[in-house]
Length: 369
Ligand SMILES: C[S@@+](CC[C@H](N)C(=O)[O-])C[C@H]1O[C@@H](n2cnc3c(N)ncnc32)[C@H](O)[C@@H]1O
Image 1: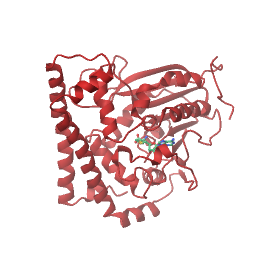
Image 2: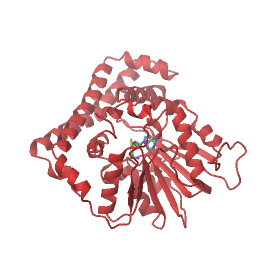
Image 3: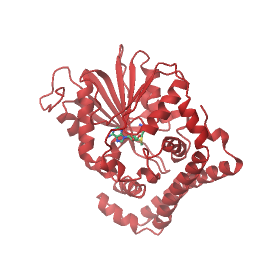
Image 4: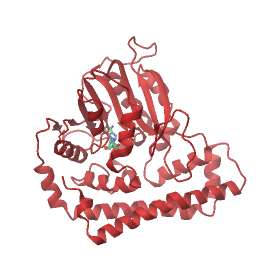
């Protein structure tokens, strides 16, 4: 498979490196300066609303916000230009991708896309994940810079797979909801080599790229275009249902439906694990995250922070529910908390739950569809 980054011209490389450098400076220099300015003011907020008001009053905040938004726009422009100028080659690559690993790609051109999904250019990516055959290539390229190159080689996803997912001897089927272009799905195949691995997503471009890349790497994965709220898979057929960075992109009701669908798919004793974000309890830090999401066209991020997802899991008949902090750079799951880090970073966390062997008392609608 062609990695566009191996083909960049010197100008394209310089442009990408400039944006990456800007983002690193913003994260490692401007954000700590913003935190210092807030601390120097001596005002401690007790709520996120209060902290947001204080944040907006800081002299550095307009500069911090401007840099954040501008570098995100520059990033999509650079990624879009690099990908679209190679459209013909990349299209041919998708069309002629070798098969042989034993995976599959099932697209559903008639699948209705929810308006909450199509109404926003998520992350400010023009056209979002779904609107153009090249959307996934653009997203794949852009995401490397967004993650400051720390997720190259799918490091975060591999850490999630190795530290947050349970031992499941004899696992027969695992499903990744909102699999995108497959960087969350491929590590599952290594962790559960005997299981059927299925990746589900609303967006056809991501699935096509995921399929081509998995086949090229010799990894058998069944990719299917479906809504994570109604996957069409059999009830009780899965040992594990995962998702990474998907719940925060949907409104609270869709989140509830997705968790109920995951519960329906699990066999008794099966496990649910979603890598997401959680509020840290520090009002100032949480305010900066929510403000970031607003600027980055992630309108439902505050639904994730504001929803009782553990109660949603209970309603769906799941037990042993918890959120555990996750350090994407070094340790993976960190039961003792996120630890001190001065640079801008997301408060990653893992949502865990289990489908009990005996139905939980509050179970609603599980196993019935
Ligand atoms: C931020 S991306 C994450 C992709 C992948 N899990 C990863 O970690 O790279 C979110 C993905 O969720 C998908 N998505 C959002 N809502 C969905 C839904 N209701 N059903 C299936 N996929 C969904 C989007 O199309 C997108 O590919």
